[in-house]
Length: 504
Image (cartoon, rainbow, N blue to C red; front, side, top):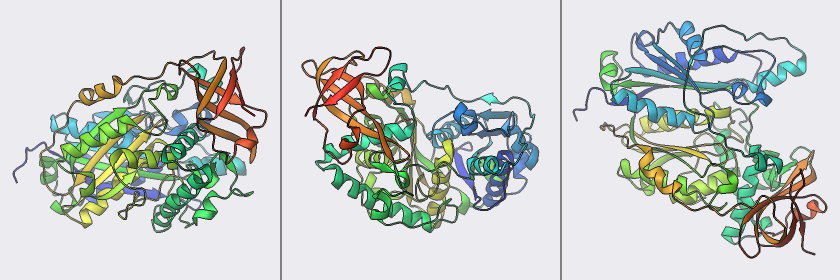
């Protein structure tokens, strides 16, 4: 097949993990995977041909809570370039969100097809494990590096309202459990049965992580071990124990190398290294959690996945290799349901082992997912690989269908299919509720394994308006209780959160 010379193609992948004491700076980690991706492509004089480097925003620059005392580069893409002998005309950084790696692949594939770039390096990393260990040991690392200013990539969106923050809807460990309790009711399961289900689901993920050479925690665990609360596996946000939470304490990095077909030919990249993006999509949910249509589904995942698969002219049954974003088990289940894949599909839902066990390197996890999919596609020419990447609180989504078979690249404007999500009606939010209502979703937030308070999303009796509230007294009794649809009495907060009381 004769392709347009600017057809984009993925040609190089590189991954890195440190389970020892290397304690590399983030810029050295990024340079290491950049070199690996360049070497992996099998071409010549590749570094000199790179005309753009984009780096996924590190957690340290994403939120003040993750900033450490050791500093970092002022321009990570330029720091990579200086280390590998590249002279890109564009150095780009950002944005926040676990969807970013696949979104960048989609974006730069389009820019390559448009003739805006010829050779693009994408990279990302997290050194949070090293940062935490060094601080604990009292070490004084210096990662500061003045490399100028990068071009800002992407627009950051505010994913939390002040009202949500007031009720504890902020950290992902508080939010994803809300989806899990809603899922249990949607499936018609008790909470005990739902915990057993997610134990079996995530035990399969641990088996993949145990065999992955780039996993931060390559340990296989049983379903019972995963879901049973113990001193070492305490509840964080019910029904999630520690082993059901994304592990961000990692030292991991990954990079991808994209080129035009003309550049791949010019630089001598073998045909067997080339992986094409057959279909892609980018969507976002109703931005605020309190605005969602419901808490057991994702219209944006359904629409985005369907668009990416249709663009590739395949169905979900045609996927041979897949990696579904897996920060928490609710994300896996909702994505699988939305795409039309069984939770126990024999193909497996992850190639890494997931963020809980492989590791959750901040916004960059799906760079590893793409690398694993590309490797499987190369090993099985003509097979389809699928990546679902998620950011926020099931908020932002990116999709990619990959295959070694040459194919001209086309990418529809996401605004076209995003309009369907935007047009969906959300329940009205009542910020000062009073009276009777019913629980729509809940979680019990724990402090050192002890129930601290519960977050409740509910609906008012009568008009059905949605409300947010907390339960303090007796919140421990909500553990393993089947409470979706249960009656509560809610009182509007006065400068604090709304308070709910379970019906006796």
